[in-house]
Amino acid sequence: MSDLKILTVNDPEQAKVLRSKSRKVAKVTPRLVALAQQMLETMRQANGVGLAAPQVGILQRFFVVELPADEENNLPAETYILFNPEIVKNAGEQIGYEGCLSIPGYIGEVARAEKVTIQGLDEKGHPVRYKAEGYLARVFQHELDHLDGILYTDRLTDPATFQRVEVGEEETREREIAIT
Ligand code: ZN
Image (tube, rainbow, N blue to C red; front, side, top):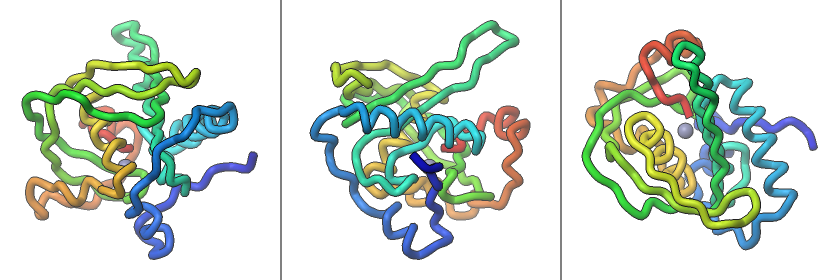
């Protein structure tokens, strides 16, 4: 399989794909799982923490998320591959900055639910359910939006918060910005 290319809104044709609604995955096949693994690689190379299938031109409902290992606190990386994800419960509110691999070089402030319960299918096609809060909950909500053609810029608390930024890994970790 060739390398995956991350689509960006800078190209009108690619923007059209990013703005499309993805269809449900009929069956979790080995081919789709291999594709998800490849998306994880592509995401790591881009220093992202999440990547949804439409961002690589595949209009199907799945995404990958990986929170990097926290060596200071001895926490391993957390990796998620979710097919047909759905948020079944949400609570509270958090306000914070987000960036997107499909909108390179910018960040903006977005309000999200503080806690979500998300369910979907894992790599074996088995139902799974995760409870997430804070940063991880934010990433899940951002990824899920991609499957409906929604970008975080649609949800800015204020257009004035949308700003240019140099997205170095150091900086994104320091500021805890979800680049997904
Ligand atoms: Zn994104």
